[in-house]
Amino acid sequence: MNSLKNDFSKILGNSSKNESEPWTREGRGDTLATDEGTDITEDIKGKIKEKVNEQIEEKKKSILDIFKSEVLGNKEDSKVSTDLDQYIPSSKTNKEIVRHSAFILSYQEEYELASWVLHRLVKEAAFGKAERSNEFLPDPLVESGSAVTQDYSRTGYDRGHLCPAGDFKHNKELEDETFYMSNMSPQLPDFNRGIWSDLENKVRSWVKKRSELIIVTGPILKKGLPTIGRMNKISVPEKFYKIIYDPAKEEAIAFLIPNEGSIELVKSFTISIDELEAMTGIDFFAKLPDSLEQKIEVNNNVDDWY
Image (tube, rainbow, N blue to C red):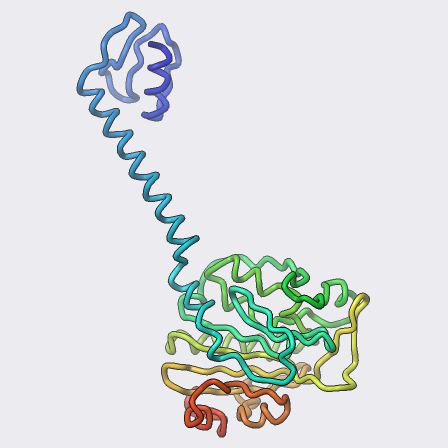
């Protein structure tokens, strides 16, 4: 009988301090059982059954929530990581395409950098509370091997994000992916923490009103760039670009910013996508209808965004 009492005690969240005394529910005087073999009343049996059923239903709900999260996926997460193929840039240098849940990139072993990183920014994703990890790791999906964090040590350059960590603060796992070294590029501190950060914040302010944005970011790569690195030779870009496309409004804007500190407004660095394509040899929206591609690429379309 003592064993049975202990089982009931666990179910109801109480315990008997002294098995020689009647065990009662906290705050009440109705006796459940005693060492003398008093039968459990039907009323208490009913309460126990009700409690057990509640626990079973809570467990079912917990399992269902896990299933939705792990198998079906969170709605915002799935919007971030799916249907990006239609926006993959076309380029002769697309030798190694690397796909992560948060972004897709084209890795260039020659420079130990990505030439472009593609991701989707949704309104819900931009304003989460996930803590920044700052755990920079080699990218396990880069077959040729990515740069490593030690390549940046004592160089005077930041490990600058191409796809921003701040665009995934709704989901810790997605945010952590942005710290793969394949998503990094050597950036001067005054640039990375100044005008580049200003641009990233500006884009997140736009998504509040625009629901979702398609973003392509990268360095301007060319022969003869200086390099850093202990284990790998990482090219140091002179300029970085960012393209933002709103598929709902069919509007786009692009920026090209020198890798240096600046007191200028972000707006002053706009450029047409056509001009960027001429510099990089990349066709950024090759899979869009020709008429739409021409519409968004010919002009810098500043007035649509400011």
